[in-house]
Length: 148
Image (cartoon, rainbow, N blue to C red; front, top):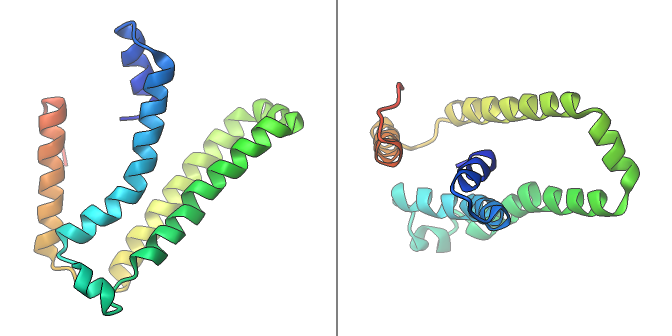
């Protein structure tokens, strides 16, 4: 669930906004590190494969920390120490929102292309099974069937 949704629903229920935002952000950050473990488990990658050099979980988590946690930390330090950066960002909010969406679309596109270019050894049946599982989770969570 997005942070905006959490805030709207919490305010509608007269809840604690700060606690709701903290929980949403914390869950998002935990999800970044929990998702690879779950995916490896679904695909049948065991600790034996990790031990024999088939997959290095430490390097996966190191890359995730560099790509997710480090930018967040640098941004928070810059935001709290340099007011000129905050003013610059506030004046150009629309530009930065567009750049954020464009960067996200680029990341998704390149990951999609790389996945099918490298010919991963995951059978299409397992990919479809994970998609069906996701569809069922959405159906159970929101009470409707998404159009996929």
